[in-house]
Length: 67
Image (cartoon, rainbow, N blue to C red; front, side, top):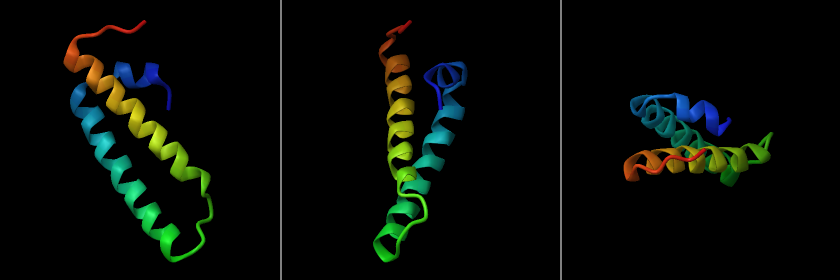
């Protein structure tokens, strides 16, 4: 997921996507604890996507404009 794509979305869509990714990360974490996951790299990409969304939301909240 690219930051430019995230900046084009409205706040409601970002919150919805953040919720979905957080749930997916939680489920993947449980799966990893109980058994071997098929794609362990997915956990890393989920964490980074969540961080990107939180960054964009924070920028909007503080009024910062990144180029």
